[in-house]
Amino acid sequence: MNREEFLRQLEQLLRDIPESERREAMEYYQNYFEDAGPEREAEIIEELGSPYEVAESIKKDLFGENYMREDVIKKKAGQNYDDGQQRQNNTTRNILIAVIVVLTFPFWVGIVAGAFGILVGAIVCIFALVVALIAIVGAFFIAGFVMAGIGIVKMLTGFPAVGMILLAIGMFMLAASLLGLLAVVWIGMSIVPWVVRSIVNLCRKIFQKRGAAI
Image (cartoon, rainbow, N blue to C red; front, side, top):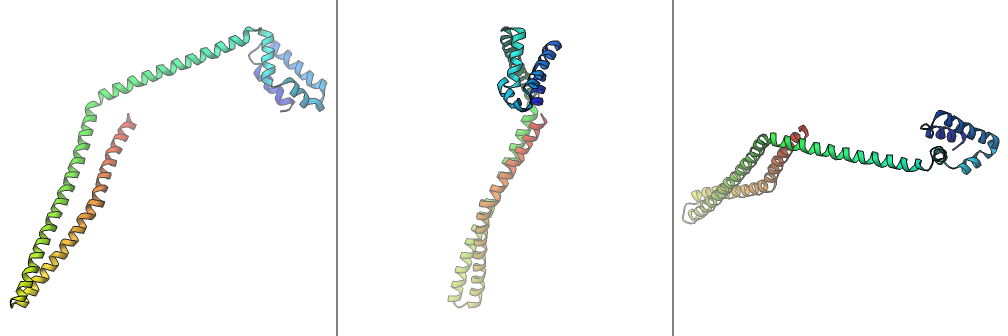
């Protein structure tokens, strides 16, 4: 900090004292720097202390010992006012939120019921699809096993052509049941969690939009 910065800050800190007293104080410290000379500028600044300390000393000389106490009282009063205002604002906001929740309660009940219905319906549909696929896979497996057995019997009893056809059909049905089983496993491990996550995310977005609108 140099002389100009020190004097500029000091003048700003003395804005709340009478103009004549401020002018006299500024002239005193300007002359003090000029008498010391540029070579002692840093030494004088270190000797005087910060502009804030100098300003507080001047105000204390002007207003007496009560100045510091009155300043502290004003700061505490301002802080108490701010705290009270903040509490009042929080109470008003809480009351407003409670009123909005009460007035929009039927609407929220409709949204929750609709979202729950969509979720339950989707889960039921997925469960029914999985059960149907399991039933089809089981039917194909049993039918394929029976057809393959009949085909083997026909081949051994003198009807090789018919037996080979029935055996081929049975093997095809067994292969189809195996593929169906893989499809059921894939749906259970991939599609079902994805559908559930999608429904949950959709419901969450609906509630977030409503909350932002309020």
